[in-house]
Image (cartoon, rainbow, N blue to C red; front, side):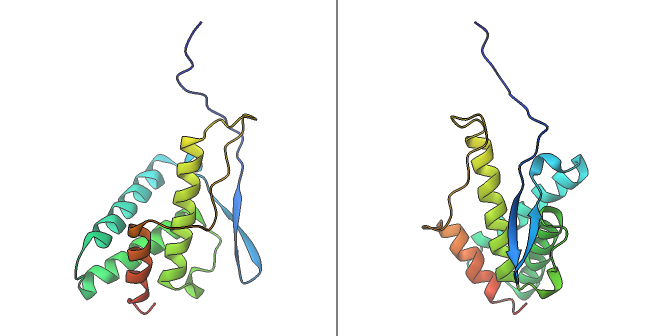
Length: 139
C-alpha cells in the first residue's frame, strides 16, 4: 500500500467575516498567487516581530499598522479597510490565521472536508499582545 503524501483539492470552501452586517469572503492562502503569498508571509513576520517588542516606537507601530492593512487587503480584499481600526484588522488576521492553521492541521477531517477552526475561547499571549498593541496605534 502506498502512503499518501499530499492530498490537494481545487475546490474552495470560504468562510466569511461580517462587518457592519455585511459578509465579506475570506480568501484562503491556497488562492493567493506566489507574489501575494510571499507578501502575506512578510507581513505576518513583521507582526510577529512587533509582538515580541517590549517597548515599540511610533515608527514600529506605524509599520505594524501598515502590515495589518496589507494582510487584510490580501485575505479580505473587499472589506472596507478605511472603516476598520487596527484592533479590527488584528482580529481579522487572527481569524484568518486560525482558519489557515485549522485547514492545514485538519486537512482531512472524518468526512474528508477541512475541519472548522475553533471560535471564541482563550487566545494565545501573542494574540492578546498583538491586539493590545494595535489598540495603542489610535487607528
